[in-house]
Amino acid sequence: MKIQALTVFFFIILAGCVSNKNDNTPLIGFLDYVQDPTIEQAHDGFFDALKENGYDTENNTLKVVYANAQGDIPTLNQAADMILAKQPVLVATNVTLPTITMANKTNEVPIFMIVSPRPDIAGLTDASGKNPPNLFGVYETLAYIDTAISIIPEVMPDAKVIGTIYNQAEPQSVDAVHVLQEACNRFGIQLILKPVTNSSESQLVAQSLLNENIDA
Figure 1 (cartoon, rainbow, N blue to C red):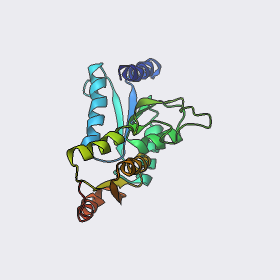
Figure 2 (cartoon, rainbow, N blue to C red):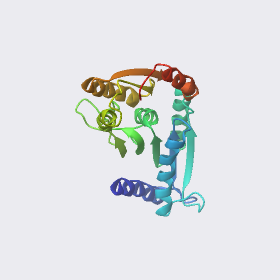
Figure 3 (spheres, rainbow, N blue to C red):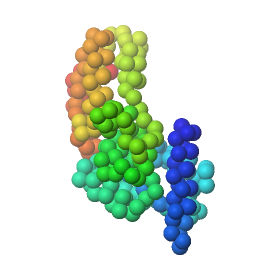
Figure 4 (cartoon, helix red, strand yellow):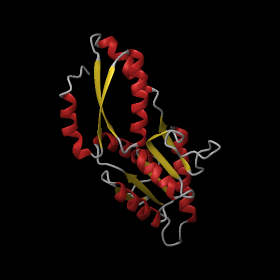
């Protein structure tokens, strides 16, 4: 993580060196997909790390153009274009879809991905398996899923049916479902799936899932 943070600071320092004479304050973009308390922790952590290293909007050592797509794909594309039009020195992308969107729009502006899957899982590698040259940051794998399933028989020996909600518009979520299904098959557990397409459906879908007589 320290190496990734140093890379961010390198790009920001470089930006200050090449900025116009009237304003040496580096500009970065931050692209969110949804408004969510858990996702906001990644947002806060990113800016806390910058602040600890001397880059902060309050002290006028950093400028930020921020956009949140509110779970809407057309809005996400428009937001990505808007950020790139501001010519940022770097763009941070929070969760999978902003990362994929931004990577498809530029191969020059550095992209720092957050809460995103490994580039090959996200379908961002080329035919030779290489990552986009401007993509770096912190990525996730799906290795945690096996552990999440294997612990269920230990704490709930009688559990035979589990349920889950997933975002069918989110590539990493869909990939996770495939891994989850394979893990359930190995442990002889039935998996009931309920898809959602936006956050407004979550409560209704969750209630529907609870009506399926699931054990966990």
